[in-house]
Length: 73
Image (cartoon, rainbow, N blue to C red; front, side, top):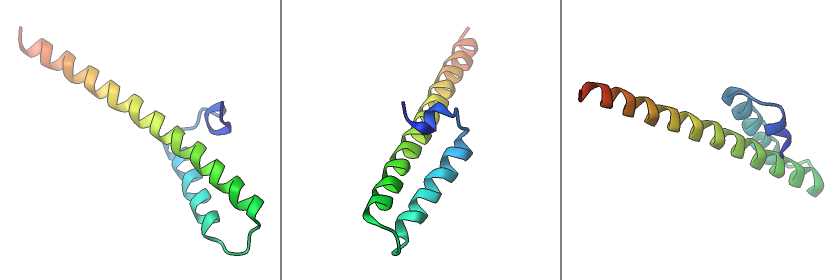
């Protein structure tokens, strides 16, 4: 399990982590090891954001089906 997932981050927190990792990747004064670490952290935050968005999407689909089903009766 990734560090981002272990922390149960909100979408906003995960997005901020992703933005920081991307910003750190743009710096030219970091070592290759730091760059790889930032890249890996960015991937973890991206995956966490994606998971949160997919869960939200499924909830919306479920709600739409409930609303649509109740209107058809």
